[in-house]
Amino acid sequence: MNKPDSLRAALVAIDPELARDPQQLILWIDEGAVQSPMTAAFHFSYAYRLNVLLLGYAKHQAPLMIATLHWLRVNQPDLLTPGKDAIAFEADFLDNASVDLQFTLRLTEQVRAVKRDDGGFDMNFIDEPDPLLADDIGLGEGGTMPPLSDLWFAGERLLPDVPLPG
Image (cartoon, rainbow, N blue to C red; front, side, top):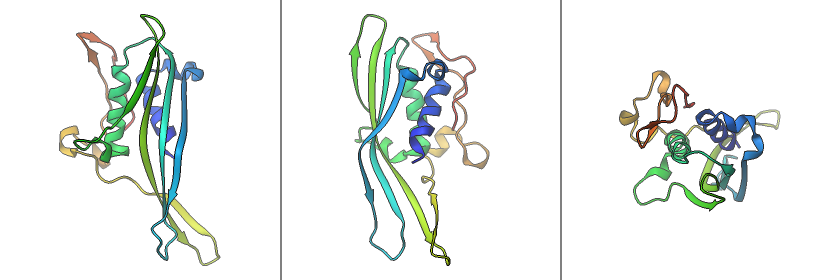
């Protein structure tokens, strides 16, 4: 599965301190299932709940949500449709400055499996459809997401020149 590592990279890009202290950012999957279309092809999909836990996080949480929503626009755009809960979360306020924050995403990943003449399979993950509201986000060359290069919260600049991978 590719999406957990991809989301981790997006969160670390928005807050590089998460890379310096990997014990602060924990990801795991539960409620996972493999779905198959019951056809002659061996294609299948993973469906799972990705849990993201930040321990003792002492910064604004809004940049994490912006980074996650930005990531969802490319990697799971169906979660951003009206009436759908994109991100479920729980928070445990440790004190006035830090929080244990857990959020969950219901994700899917499609896998194409083509049988080879030698009896094996060639497998690859299928890209998601075009991002939601592609004109609004101004896709760059090759259909990639533009980097998130600046972020302000309540008049305070939180992210000067920290790009977010697309």
